Amino acid sequence: MAETKRQKSKIRLTINEHCIPEQGAAGEFWIAKAEQTVWYTTNSGIVVNLSDVLSTVPSEFAVLKTEVASLRQTVQALLDMTKKSSEYIAWLGERTAKGLRVAKK
Image: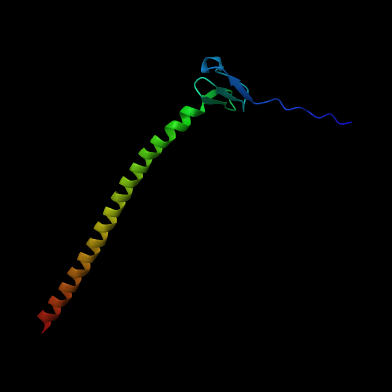
């Protein structure tokens, strides 16, 4: 009969964060009950606090969103300026053409 391999659990429960090692096996999750935080071991073996990472994402996203909005306004202002310049050049062309027609008469 074929033997079934039992997978080792990759979720570790600890009492608090002080019990979580700085290095671990890749793919392990650590849960600190007292602080209610979740930690993850990266492929390089470094243990990262996912709770901190996920809590900082919204604030960084808000900063990025503000920068994008500012860039959008700048680009729109440049487009408006270009449009107004082309409209002014067209108007000058029409005035010049009218002036030449009047002068020829």
